[in-house]
Length: 194
Image (cartoon, rainbow, N blue to C red; front, side):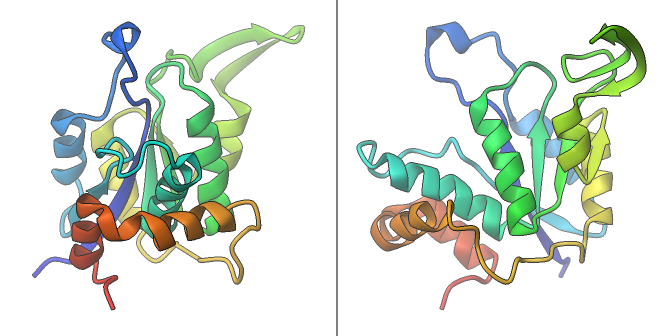
């Protein structure tokens, strides 16, 4: 039996008609990761699973943060402009000791061969937040799978969870997790059930 690695799929979630042209995590991206993680298997933790309680926004945030916390790594889809949520997921992953792999192809929004800004020209530019927080910045989901293998054993949970994450994770675990079939299945698959 192959060792199982878990990945939190960080990226945009379709929220309406204006989002249909954005890139998202699909089976294509997941298959690219799966095919490049030998000798491991991979389980994906999805922030876009159906919402258990849409009115519980603290619990929704807690679900994402719980997934970031239990994942072996976070893979960020940075092929195009992303929103506030991805930045928070990056910061939370680093605070929780979860390695971050960013998929940012060359000459895309967050990674350029050359960029002129702030009065200078920079070569091999990677957005400072990504460059500072990521364990790896790669060009494709296949390369992300290869980087995922390199992260085995790198996860280093903090001795204490950051205070700004505690209320949300607690809310999710106490009031939503027991009614969240995808996460209950993920917990069982990852051996996190008691």
